[in-house]
Structure formats: structure tokens, C-alpha cells
Amino acid sequence: MAEDPGEVEFVQVATTFDAVEEAEALAASAVQARLAACAQTEGPVTSVYRWDGAMQKDKEWRVTFKTTAALAERLTEYIVREHSYDVPEVLVTPVTGGHLKYLEWVQSETRQE
Image (cartoon, rainbow, N blue to C red; front, side, top):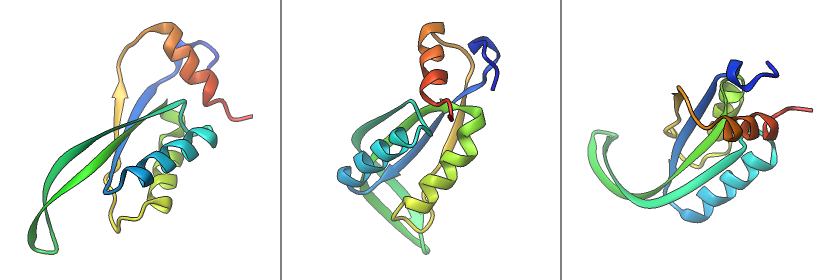
């Protein structure tokens, strides 16, 4: 990993859960494992989608993880492994800019020792 935060690519990884307790537990465990510097839980949100050929409408809680691009795949694997959904949403979005001190903090908190 580059030492200059300007050279490190940052991402946000988002997923959803049908229970706030599960959302908060996975958020905490991913931060504890240093796969993300921060995880924010928000909701409920209403999700409308098709599953098994039928329309569904459910309340869900979104978790957004702040991490580095280098950890995105490991974090995705962690979310999929720990998630209760058969096919959890996991979307990785590049961060194209931000406050340098915050990005330095994200880099520091996700450094794998």
C-alpha cells in the first residue's frame, strides 16, 4: 500500500440487511477486523425488487463501509460469507476525492499489520 494517501485509491462498499441488529453487528465486526475504517448504518429504507419471479417490498438497513480499494475484494468476501441473504447486495463505489486528513485516517485504520 502506498504511504502517500494521494496515491491510495479509496472506495465505499454498500450492502443492505433486513434487520438493524444484523447490520450493526456486521458493521462492527468488519471495522474490528480492519477491513473498513468506518461503517455507517442508515435506514430503514424501502426496497422494491423481484425475487424468485415475484415482486417484493421490504424494509432494509443500508451499511456503507469506508475502506481502500486494496481491501474491497476481501471486504466483499467477508460480507457475502457473513450475510444472511442468499445473494446479498454488495456494491463497490470508487471515491474520486475527499478531505485529505479523513483519507489519511481511512488508510491508517485499515492498515493490515
